[in-house]
Image 1 (cartoon, rainbow, N blue to C red):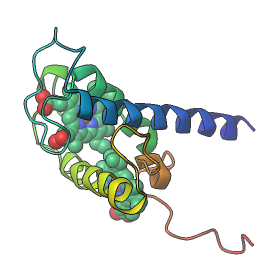
Image 2: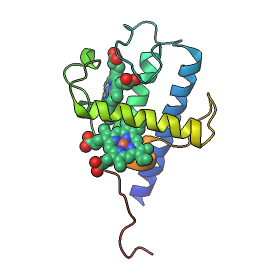
Image 3: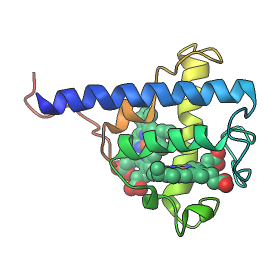
Length: 136
Ligand code: HEC
Ligand code: HEC
């Protein structure tokens, strides 16, 4: 019971934050003007506002069951660095998820995404690839 309540909550956060991303992809960085610009966005829109990026990053941690440091080294000012293989994998995953939504699920710019990191990962680094034996 606790588990399914938690999962429902996490799912909600995930969908919301991905919607934020889509909005900022359209609107062009309003809001986060006070902070220094982000330096190394290669998949996300380059002008995406820092608070929107951080909100999306929080969905990554929840979806995969990890901390920021699974993909990032050093201080919060060093998030631009590409030292960890998990960050490169996450970029590929992000491209895949954006393509699935746009090309296969008909999600238009500004609409909430239908597929997210959570759709597969469900709180784990390694998604299950088959139903448990004897489950049906
Ligand atoms: C699963 C891996 C992963 C996790 C976990 C993660 N990030 Fe990221 N982060 C990325 C990737 C990938 C990018 C680059 C996206 C791109 O190239 O468009 C990024 C970029 C960033 C940037 C932009 C840096 C710059 O200047 O280019 C910030 C800031 C950031 N992350 C903060 C965080 C914070 C804070 C957390 C924890 C709440 C976090 N990240 C967790 C993968 C991750
Ligand atoms: C279609 C299902 C699917 C989706 C959606 C998905 N992933 Fe994955 N992800 C996988 C699979 C499968 C693996 C490989 C696990 C293994 O090696 O056994 C993986 C592996 C990873 C890894 C490497 C795990 C490690 O050991 O460090 C990272 C990081 C990752 N995914 C991030 C993400 C992020 C971030 C998103 C959302 C932007 C995402 N994934 C969306 C299926 C998915």
